[in-house]
Length: 173
Image (spheres, rainbow, N blue to C red):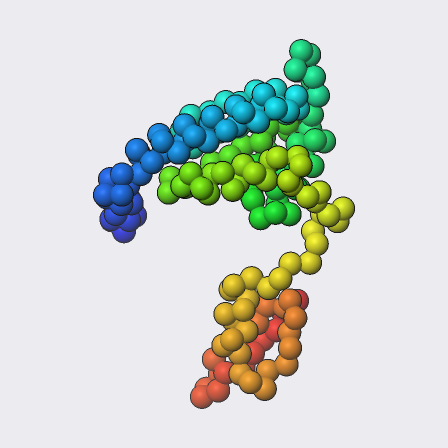
């Protein structure tokens, strides 16, 4: 497809122009070093592995037996999510935290993200898995485009269909 080829070429040019590969090596090394420091500090982290920016933490209940810690992994993910950090979970036993930040990550951003893993700093996640969220930017932008006399729709999605000269909203839950 010519369009995707042009887009791919543009991405490669940006990577080269902004020297993002070097940034990946430098910040990825810092990222790995900080993760290794966390491993030394917390017995729950059994292993740190990965390359460059793509890193993983294997959480275990005991470093000797390498018993997986899936419940603790889920708790850590929820704490991170509650603080605005999205990380992945994987592994055969669901006990591996996967992190793949963008190539544009800075040292300061990496430090801020890793601070959320510090037990003393990270507040506990709420007990409810999906607490109410503030409206997203997209929802706020949609709300800004609504006619002034449109009723409040709350969390509902508002779609508009054109009918003749006017616009009629169709509301969906």
